[in-house]
Amino acid sequence: MIPTQEYELRRARVRESMEGMGLSAAIITAPEDVYYLSGLNNQGHFVFTALVLDTRSPAATLVAREMEAPTAAVQAPGCAFAAYADGEDPGRVLCDLVRPLIDGERRVGHQPESLSLPVAVWRDTDRRLGSPRWVDCAQALTEVQAVRTDREIACLREAGRLADIGLRAGLAAAAGRRRGGEIVGEILAAMLSAGSGYPGFVPLVRAVRQIGQEHVAWTGDPLTAQDPLFFELSASIARYHAPLGRTARPHGVEGAGAAADIAHAGLDAITAGLRPGRTAQDVYGDWKATIEAGLGRGYQRHHCGYSVGLGFPPSWMAGRVDGLRPGNDTPLRAGMTFHVQSWVDDPRAGTYAISDTALVTDGGGELLTGSPRAPERPG
Image (cartoon, rainbow, N blue to C red):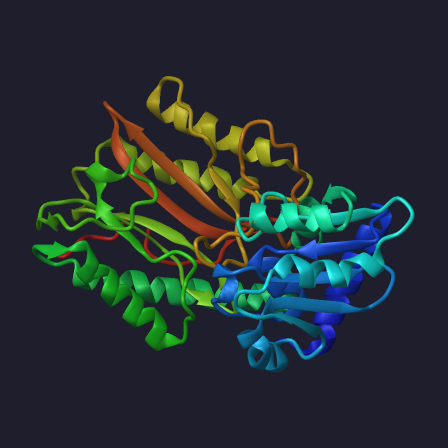
């Protein structure tokens, strides 16, 4: 349980950042950021929910459906609550809160890329407020959260431990001819029974021949006893996620071709490169060079990892994809966390993928997930 004082400190850091941007107020709508700054942790974000910050005072107000008031009272006692009834326009309630806060240059922070900011609500708010100057504050929120505190790292470690439990259960359930849903059910049961919250993504289990269908959880097609399987999953502790991915073949890495060794070397390169002062694209370059050396030719992938931490459905990562990719010159800092991925899909070397969650430290990346690298699918 995070104490109320911690949320107050977080909001103070955000206010300081937004004062520097010249904002009078900020409307926070991404579920992860609403939670980070208030403690609201529910599945009510399918309708409009926001946290309104006054950048010149400690005041913070949750705007949500009327029925969420009891939840907010328990989870976010440090915030006021402004309700809208079913059938009522949430934009009116939002504007009544924001209008007294804006003056002068009328600069209002918002998150235009948030899936939880409906266009209809934003347009209505803009009209009611007389078209203030809208400022994207998403990156400022990302910066405030980029380096994890000791409490957050402890949550990530525990999420990693439970993800390992989930993978073990999935492997045990994968013996013989099974359907993906049966395996996923065992993974979820094991993680939830061990103390996990519900993950932002359900576990993904599919045959390696379907590995390119990256966000397909499972299909109804039976998995034969001979199918190599790809598992990608995460547990969740206080909404913090530590994903991992493993390729499991009926005889371990036997038959995986060169792809397994190359992918493992790539993961080592990523992990070694996660040091303060280097950039996200530097780490991608390390991985790419390692894969190309193993293949003996050029190889390209959109990224080799991304920032991971807080997550609400439909994702286990928050906000923008802050990836280890070409062109991203974001400097790494100790305490950042990434889902690091080494995927090889090559017509000659074969197909193999592996991933872990890693913490940036002065000595390189520390893995927070500890499953064996080359698990064998039971017969």
